[in-house]
Amino acid sequence: MGNLKIYQASAGSGKTYTLAFEYILLLFKHNEAYRNILAVTFTNKAAGEMKGRILEKLYLMSTGKENDYSLKVQNILHIDPEEIKVKSNRILKVILHNYSRFSIQTIDSFFQKIIRSFAMELGLQYSYALQLNITKVLNSSVDALLINSNTDDELRKWLILFAEAKMNEGKSWNFKKDIFNLGKELFSEKVKMYSTALYEFAGSTESKKNYLVELNMIVKTFEKELSDIGYKGLDEMNQYSVFFEDFFYKRIGPAGHFQKITLNKDYSPNSHVYKVLSDPEKWVSKSMPNRSELIRVAKNRLHPLLEEAVKIYESSYIQYNTAKILLSQFYTLGILTDLQKIIQKYSRDQNEFLISDMASFLYRIIDNNDAPFIYEKIGSIFTHYFLDEFQDTSFIQWKNFRPLIGNSLATGHGNLVVGDVKQSIYRWRNSDWKILKEVIYDDFNAFNLIDRSLDSNYRSRENIVNFNNAFFSFAPDILQEEFNSTFDSSLFDEKQSNDMMDKISLIYENVVQKAARTVCPEGGAVRIQLFEDDKEEKWVEKVDEELPVSIIELIKRGVEPGDIAILVRTHKEGKRAVDAILDHRQKNDGEGMEEFSIMSNESLYIKNSAPVRFLVCLRVALGLP
Figure (cartoon, helix red, strand yellow):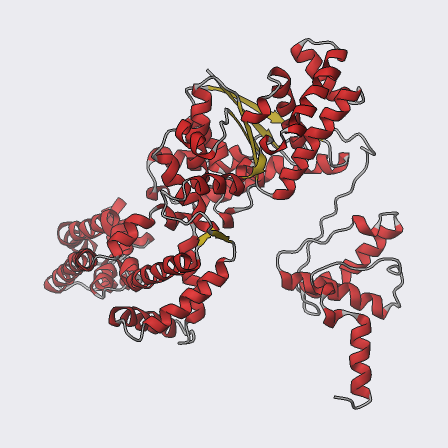
């Protein structure tokens, strides 16, 4: 049985070093194993770096200049240094003479290779072009959609409803941009997973009609049941000549709840209602002169109705609210369906394949075929998989790799994944951190899983590592407590609720690192400064003043300008930071900032070039156009 090594690799922990070593170790066990290893990264740069690292290390090992890797191989495989040199040289030559079989590539490159092999089965021309510019395709398709609305009555109806909804929200009736933003959902992974069933449903007039009837029935039934209870409660109060003011919290209390649910606006019971449900004696204040008579009416006539209303709310409100939301957005389904058809026609006419369709197309291929057949089609047989940056894997991407890795494990081969849940920042690209933290363990629990944590930081200085260790040791627990205090467990089953109560803490359980930097390990500095508004200045203005001062201070302490980076959340904030530095330099004649320039997106614009701005001002001063 094969094994799957799972490396949890924090920032600076030697991830590339480990990947390269595991790759080389496999080559030493089987000289030509590189033909059967697929190493996958997420960028071309990372793929190039990994290839370069492996070839460099093999060359150094063949010349006897690489001690670290050589010693490790020597200890694990029990071979002498001279044999390591000879074998390294042999492996290096074999790879260079068959470089095309040296498969270290991006995940998209691998997926495209499979899709091209199945072009005929997918109805694609083999000469198709891979379209990366989704914005261009969507813009053209939205234009075509609006033109089609002139002749398509149903589409025109959907667009009118969409425009009315936007105007009711106070937005412009010119909704092309809104349709464009709505159309982006067609390229999301969640939509693509269910696209076939969704478009089959949307293309059937009868299905849509029946679904609308069902949704309206859910809404009307819920509202009528609660409204009827509300009127019954008010009738009982009228029959026994009691008033809202006679009961707990008057119109906002349990008696007022009957009136509220008759208005078809707000059906949610407030805290006063729940207090009375737990103790019927609380219906009436102890200071009321006719309390016993009011309590009798409340217990016998009003309380059962209130219990029934709350029971209906708790059992049916989620379904009711879902139905209302679906009804309010049902027109978007019609728009998206027509837009998707136009996008597909555009792709066929242009002989293009959208990169956003790659993973979902591949899923259909791999899901219905055995791994050996796929290898036969692509002309390669991979028995080992090395996956880098695994925390950025999306659900469909994992669905595509899972059967291939499963086949490898079942045939007794080793595989490896490397990632860090804490660095899962590509959710906009459908990445799912739960795959690394949970799913991979569940999917392959029948195989030999080797879980390892790289806990040394070779990049940062000692003070930085110590700060991170201290901060992230307690911050997750604070965040977990804050989450738990607002978490509504009623929306989940017991197991899911229990999992959520310590989810954040578990993500950061292996956060502590050891400082292991070899060059200048000591030192490093962290300073946190919080800014708040006051009567004289906004906090952003204070930041504008402090930023250039802090930079000058660092330069005076010997920090190279090229080692300073300013990170912001938005392009607007980045421009503001650059302007603040330039403004400070101008006001202070460049003092402290004479010897460096600022590199940013904005600084590369022609309009921000000092000579260009001087020439423009000169022409204005001379009265030239």
